[in-house]
Length: 283
Ligand SMILES: NC(=O)c1ccc[n+]([C@@H]2O[C@H](COP(=O)([O-])OP(=O)(O)OC[C@H]3O[C@@H](n4cnc5c(N)ncnc54)[C@H](OP(=O)(O)O)[C@@H]3O)[C@@H](O)[C@H]2O)c1
Image (tube, rainbow, N blue to C red):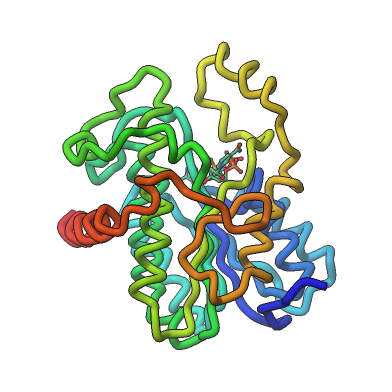
């Protein structure tokens, strides 16, 4: 019997809940009695998920809030709209992500870093007081085993367009940033009732691979794709079952697992946090 660290009626926000792992996460949380807020780029593409949740005869309907993580202004507006709802927030799932998408965000950051890390960093910052006042609460950030595929973070590269042909190296940096963010957040939330988890969902058959070159996909298939339902399991475990004493840890297969040496580098985590604070406050 698993521990259950949630109460039906609690409120969860899921970023990128229209497809893939986020879609399954939003639906499964609604089935457990969470009121779900889906933050994403398109109401039209999210409507089928909102309808699906409605068909579950939930007590409170799922809500959509526009969010484009490639725009810090949009992140601020998303947080403002959430605050206007006057709801508590017990769970924030930083799920949305891009892989292999090249270029820069509207604020001048490398695309994967800006969307996967910096947008979520600002969103979490803006919702932190709410999470603290709603505690016990959780922040679950979907990272990746791909965080191991970078030898470090080149700070200058983060303010340049994607350099590599596949964008995989930049994706790895963004997922390392997800991991460092989660561990640093745990440290900063020590003494509050906010706990935080990062995770690798597995290699999952979703739309995330759409921007990769055609030759790269068969390689992934060889590794054995999980279904989105299987891929959401670790997120759901961290959201509802992981003990608070494991705050700050990195999960895979619904259990704590070892991150790379860089992923455990607390100096790097603090450095990234402090730089991220400056970046989001000055653009
Ligand atoms: N699939 C895997 O094998 C795998 C492995 C390791 C980690 N992950 C991580 O799992 C998470 C979920 O990915 P997935 O596999 O479910 O991929 P997915 O099916 O492509 O879903 C990605 C979600 O992110 C949203 N998104 C993308 N750019 C956005 C932006 N600028 N602003 C707001 N939302 C944005 C997408 O919305 P739109 O529909 O509007 O594009 C979509 O809802 C990601 O963080 C990914 O890095 C996935």
